[in-house]
Image 1 (cartoon, helix red, strand yellow):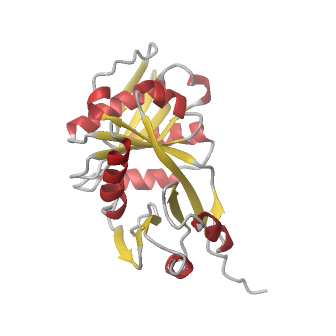
Image 2 (cartoon, rainbow, N blue to C red):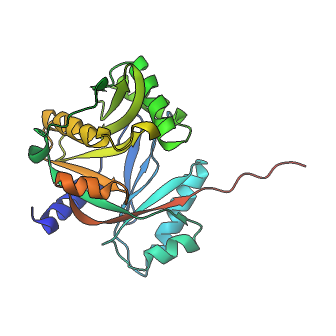
Length: 267
């Protein structure tokens, strides 16, 4: 794999050439920035790409804050390690953004993973979510795996199930019918890359191969949809597993979150 070539392809297709990731979402190219505004049923709001310099960076940051604040939405500026200007990582916190932990953009060839066989523990089954009952299982597993409310995920997946394009596919792991893990594959038509997102396992089932099995399962789904590469923003906890599976690090990515101030209340 030519890492520079693959990274350039990723930037061109998935960032500068991004397509909306859900019903009602829109992607706009505005003043050196590519941003997504989610539809009325929720979804991701944020900046995917920027081509700025010292003279334009502050104005572009302020414009994105105005845009999303006018909608009353928090949003993410997804900053990659090779983005310019270099001081953007300092300008964003100065504008009110909160820096989240840095992740690693990792990529693997789908062809190298589609035939990977991972033996699951007895009684565990992995399957694609195709109905509302499956959505509930995936939501329950996600809430237990990440110890957080996942009501947004319920709405997101139900909206995807009703969409003819269905760019997001959920996978759930069950043990004797009980949900023990969940994950997602983001699959935009016509793109070389499919994204792996939110792979989580409930605490008592960790370390038993479920995450590796979910990667292999989603690789087969990606192959069926014609993708060449799998992409994942890896936390330090998952990077060693992905490296053993053949993923290569391309760059880093750091989320910067902006939450609009709460409106004043009458006293």
